[in-house]
Amino acid sequence: MHFTLRQFRVFEAVASRLSFTQAAKALHLSQPAVSMQVKLMEEQVGLPLFEQIGKQIYLTEAGQEIYHYSRAIGQLLSEAEEVINELKGAHRGRLTISVASTANYFVPTLLGIFHERFPDVTVSLDVTNRETLLKQLEENEVDLVVMGQPPKEMNLEAGAFMDNPLVVIAPPDHPLAQEKNIPMSRMEDEVFLTRERGSGTRSAVERFFNQHGVQLNTGMEIASNEAIKQSVQAGLGLGLLSRDTLEMELALNKLVILDVEDFPILRHWYVMHRKGKRLSTVAQAFKQFLLEEANTLLHDKPVQQP
Ligand code: PGA
Image (cartoon, rainbow, N blue to C red; front, side):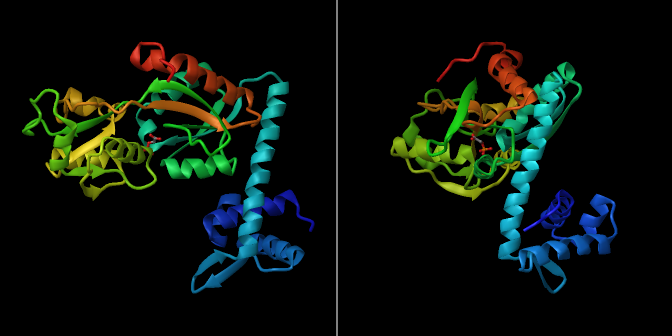
């Protein structure tokens, strides 16, 4: 099989958008030019890469395989670019990071400070849940990932840089709001609004309730920290969220943290990448920045290693 890099780029543009028209627009090419490149690739492969059902196009099995490799090639090319930048001794280039939805509450502040120091770095930031982050690590799609507890089954290099306590939240007029040292078993009488499956917060909470032999009654499953906070304020149930998501609501007294025995659930934020990954100078600098400075910048105290 002989493909040109140009063909890979065109194919990737179509495969990621599942649209010839949008790919052509993004690449500033005509649609026939895009179709022609894909056709040439299909001739090389000897199998169709896309199929059309109605108005929608889909990747065929062969298309999915080629897509997998074309993304890996794209990542290697940008790594090559970073290495060359490194040889030139520059802190410039692209930093591709993915962070857990909950880390979105503090990562932008840190990126702001990092950007002041290294204005020539272009940052590409994706915010998603734990399950997707693990996939991105596995596919080597990102330089660094920020999330809670690293999974044991993956070969990762992970460093803790900040505490991530999970707390029980309620509206200020909740009957338990004034109580002290509420027994954990009392939580069985409450309804909780929990994050979606795949969320790190959700799995930590489930594990914690299990360990304490306390049943977790889920009233509603909500795939957003913001929507959980709004729903708790509206009196739909209690919430279990990272303390990092609550700064504004606590300051404005829209929500309170309940004083429940054995809480908070003690977790940490980690910066991680696959073991053996060749980090660019920029990625290396950002990793070091998180490990050495994030906690002091955000909470004014050094990190306690777990
Ligand atoms: P989230 O949090 O997936 O619940 O946003 C990430 C984590 O704690 O790992």
